[in-house]
Length: 274
Image 1: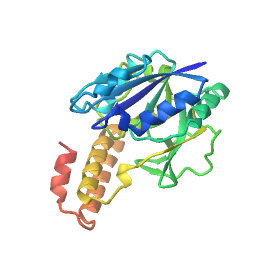
Image 2: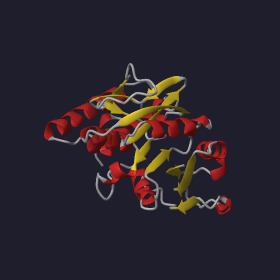
Image 3: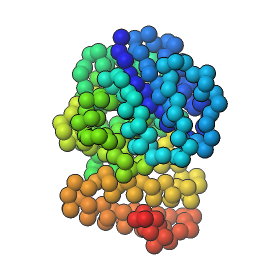
Image 4: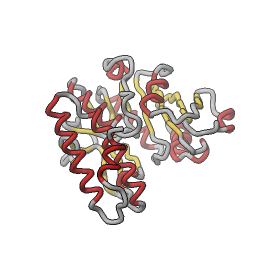
């Protein structure tokens, strides 16, 4: 039997309301090949009273101060006892056969990272090719293939070896990153070190907030958080750092020229570089 530690961070969502928790409960009942040790980190203002009824192999921690995801992941990693950790967002939906697919991949192919396909509105958005800062489609990547070194992937559903994580240092998840960019930074580190990432048959349905433009103000705020992350994800040398600053300026110009935008470029840049 394969043992995996599962990390889930909750924010303003009860345990019973989390799509990920409900998917895990269904999957663990159906899958007998994996032993899951689930860690729930709650960033909500108030602790969830339902935590007392969790199974013994589920660990609940309440923070209450909305700690950065990177900080939460590093804290949970200290309590992880399995060779691999599986990270989920709070709102990921998957069927029980997701864990079967992961288990089959882990038995068949040794890898530092096992990557699912993530779909948003029926279109696969992860994994993808990292074309410098932006993600681009990765043609020819199907389940059962090893990803090329130029790949990146969304964090939810990633299964990562502890050995690789600890090779990055005492805080493997970069704590300069609060929310966005943690996954891209991790994939870049894997690519830099010649690690192996394998795509398994499992799929996730995921609502991508960065692709939701229904509320222009919320969309701009999410882009600000994303631009902040670029400064710490793409910082290997002076040329890369210069390129990031130029790309941020270009992105801000596009934002302020879009329909329904109310904020000026100076206001956005001030928040990006705060």
